[in-house]
Length: 358
Image (cartoon, rainbow, N blue to C red; front, side):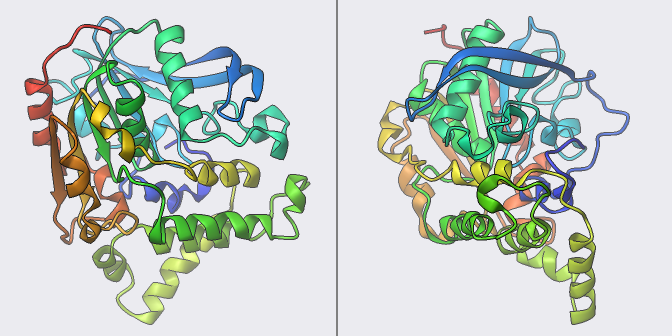
């Protein structure tokens, strides 16, 4: 699987614990492309003359467009797994690529899109947020691909949060929406505390040198391993991996042996981009039919907070699916496995009215 760095053994597990390459895929080969957004304006007021937005597409461009949004530190390739793509993109499956035109963008600052490391700006790169990332996705879809209306916008983790941004800032743009592994409220509790600790740990590392390092800070692998263990994987699954001290330490040793192949500045801005996320006050704007999906053992989005129940009361045509904890779930990574919601997604697409482009 392609990813921003090879610590994907545990970082991409933040999204998809079963994120293995789809072998002998039952759907068409993805096509890659890039589009350059001119005079890209950030929420800070800063403007970059050019921002490259990379993407993958699957299926016939004449099919109904579907936009899939990936999680933090990932890329559109994160969806190309046996547990997700082969459950959804094949013939007669919910997102059958012979009927749908599936768009998998790399968000601003991630994957092969413009980011601090690729631009040469390092920490002079604009401090983008989710609004900027959604703005880039919107420009790619409407200007780059010439699409006026989407059948579905679906995303996982950060991508799920961006789905909430899409349905509140561009409510007329889609018929249906599926935000997964997320909540529509402001960053808070463990979720923000650990993001803040991750970002501060990078900034306080002497080897980071205010972003002007010549080699990647050596603590990145350990830092990202700690973050992944603290926020992803599910208690049952982690226990089964390490049911005693020796086996638990062996799991850690394997993860720590995976070298960091990304860029510390890229990682820093990716995690800080969630700082001012909060679509909750705008939920009354939602027009799409919404299927919100979380896992009961999601470490970052605890179901016991009741936030989702409160939020869904304000969504006119919404349904909330909470996947029960089991030996098959993987905490925050559970929604990477489409078997848990394949039926509900199919029902959503059958029932959501097709609205004209706004």
